[in-house]
Length: 601
Image (cartoon, rainbow, N blue to C red; front, side, top):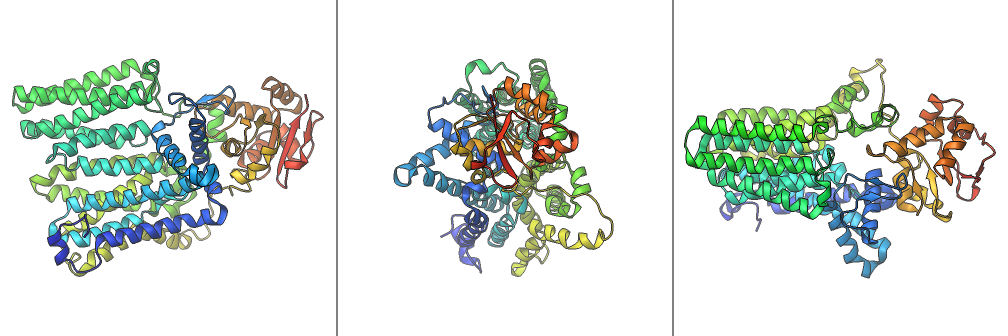
C-alpha cells in the first residue's frame, strides 16, 4: 500500500499506484544517469568539485581534524575551503561501512554511485509528498503520478544526481524540497514548523545557494504572524525556535569558537549564524509581543523594529558581506577563469551564447509562477499561506537563476509539484480521465527544452553567434585517469591548469597551485603570472614557489588563453616545444597533448 495517498483514495484510483511509479522512475533515472559512469568509470565521471570533495573526505578519514577545512596540498601551505563537513560526514561513513568488505577503491566507487542515487529517490518522494499535501483528495492519485513524472523530467536538476555527484548541490536540493514541504504546512502543524526551521539552518550550513529562497519564505512566516497574531502563535514560535536553536547547535558542531567573529561571507559562519539565530529570536520576540497585546499595528511595529535591529547589527558587524560573493576574486582571474564557468553565467550571457537552452532552463518555473499566482488569488483562506510561501520561494529561486545559471536546477525541481497542483486547481476537464498527466508532461522541463532545441535552428538560420565552449574532460586533462600517471613521480609541487588541479590532488600525492575555487586567488594568480611570463621571469617565480613539475595541456582552456594573452610567455613556448634550459620533459608520464616538465634545480 502506498504511503503517499490514503487507503480510500487508493481504492478509488484507477491506474498505476504512485509508489510503484516512483520506484520505477527512480530506477530509470539512476540507470540513465549512471550510463556515462559505466562507460568511462565512475571516478572519471567526477566534476572538478566532486573530485575535490573526494579529496576532502579522504583527508578526513586519514585523520585531518573535523574543524580543519584546510586543503594543505592546494597552493601550499594550503587554502581553507568554504565547504561543509555536513556533506563529508555521510560520505565518510559510507566508505567506512563498505571498506572492510570491498577495500578502499571499491568502497569509494560504490559510495560515488549510491549517495546521489539515494538523494534522487528522496527528491522524488519529497516532490510527490508536496503535491499530495496540496492537492484535493479526489485529484490526489493523478496529481501524484503527474508530479513523479514531471520531477523525473526536471532536466536542469538531474545533472546533480548523476553517478559521481558528491558535491553539495544535490543535498541542498533535497533539503530545500523538505523545507518547502514543511513550511507550506506550517500554519497547521507546529512540528512541521520546527522541522522547517531545522531544515533551513541545515541547508545554510551546507552552502548559501538557497539563502534567497529561505530568506523570503522566513519573511512570509513573519508576515503570517503579523496578519493572524495569536491564531498562529504556536507554529510561528516553533519555526523561530527551530531556526535559532538548530543554527546554534550546528555552529557548535561545525565551527571553531574563534571563527565566529571572522567575516566569513561565502559559507556558514558568524554572519549567517547572526541572521539565522538572530532571525529566529526576533520571530520569538514578535510572538511574545503578539501574546501580550493583540493588535495588528503593534505586531507590525514590533516586526519592523526587530527586522531593523537584526539587519542593522548584520551590516554593522559584517559590512563586507554586502558585496558579491565573488568580490574577492582578482579581476584578472574573473576574465581568465570565472567568466567562463557556466554555472555562474547570467541569463543575458546565456541569451547571447546558447538561446536554444532558454526554454529548458526558464520556461517551466516561469509558467509555474503564473499558476501559483493564479492559485494564490483564487484559493480559500485556509490554503492561502501555502500558496503565498510557495510562490515567493519559487520566485526567489527563479530570480537567482536569472543572476546565476546554477539556480535553475532548484527552481525547476521545486516547480514540479507546484505546477501539477496548479494545473489541477484550474478545475477544467484536464483532470478528468488522466488528462492531467498528459498536460503536465507537455509542459515539463524536458518537453520545453526539447522545443527550444527543435525550434531555434530554424529561427537562427544564418545569424551566426557565439557558443559556450565545452571542454572534453579527458582531452583537457581534468579526469582522474588522465592525472593518474603523475602518481609515478616523487611527490612534489605541480604547476598545472586550473581545472586540472582537483584531478591531480585526487589521483596523486602531489600539491598543486591552481584550482577552480574563488578563495584560491594566490595560487591561481601564481599560475597565470608564471605561465604568461617570459621564460626568464618564470624561472624566478618557479624558484620562489619551489615548483617541481609543470604540466601543459594543449587542449585546456588555460593553455589557449595563456597563448592568446602572452604569445611569448612560458606557456606559449612550451606549447611550441621550445623549452628553456631549466625544464626537461618527463617522457614516462607524458602523452600527446599532455606534457610534464621537471624543473631543474
